Amino acid sequence: MLLSKMRPASNTLRRTITQTPTHRTPIRAGVTPPIVGSTIGSTSNVSIRGRSYHSTSPPAPPSRICPSCSQPIPLPLTPCPECSNLLPLPSNLSHHSMLYLSSPISASDSSSSSSGSAAGSTTGVYDLPREFSHLPSNGFGLDKADLRSKWLRRQRELHPDKFTAKGEKVIDLARELSGRVNEAYNVLGDELRRAEYLLSIHDKATDETDKLDDPMILAEILEAREELEEADIAEEIDRIRSVNHEKVEDIIKQLHAAFSETPPSLESAKELAVQLRYWRGLENAAKEKAV
Image (cartoon, rainbow, N blue to C red; front, side, top):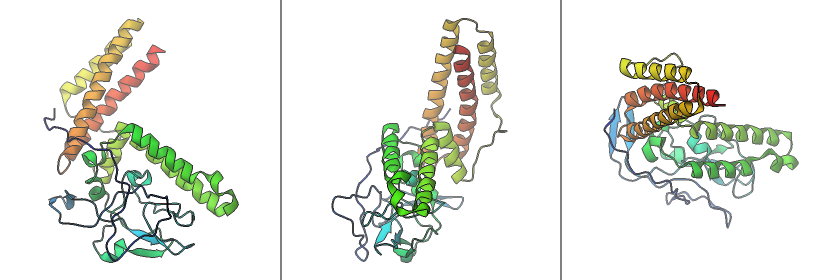
């Protein structure tokens, strides 16, 4: 059982971008880019296995040149706030960036990576662990109401019907981006899938064949499953579901704690994710039996 305490998570995102003095992004009046970013300041780093975890504000996000109006547009913003041109997004952006929960951070520290790149460019290497280090619980902590709000906003912005007059190529791009937004929402909206996604970014991906290392926990789960199989009245099934729900919520709290460490406790988080998968399986079985 993890003893570390969760860090208080603030889900209020800053709505402005602080640009470096040599680079400003013209934004149409009334349009506020929902992106987290700031100029690079002094940073306190904690390194582990080649990863760096940062305690300061994130740097200004990389940008690319809009091919329609020639203005530099910061990632992950699209459509262009200046001319409404739909811009492609790099395929390797994080789910968090796709939903405006964070902004990508270039893997390069060169100034050119934060300035305007080639028109419509979708290339670049991004440091996702560093990006997550600026989020609550290193990307695991989020508010589901805020997540849903951003998902709905992105769907309104990227709905293919908005671009019917732009031609089939732009409509196809809108479909692709809208699909990526949906996938990001589905992953981040589920605690197990969110944990597995973050672990995969840190090269600690779980697998369906992963087994529980703790024999006592395994025995507890097997006992609970046997109890569920023998239950034949609604009240008993409901009691088992209630107990199982408490187990699931407790593991989610432990996952918050594991990801909140600096650097995140990835081994503990992976073990907890495997446990959560087992308890979720029991929860689904109990729901089916209750029907």
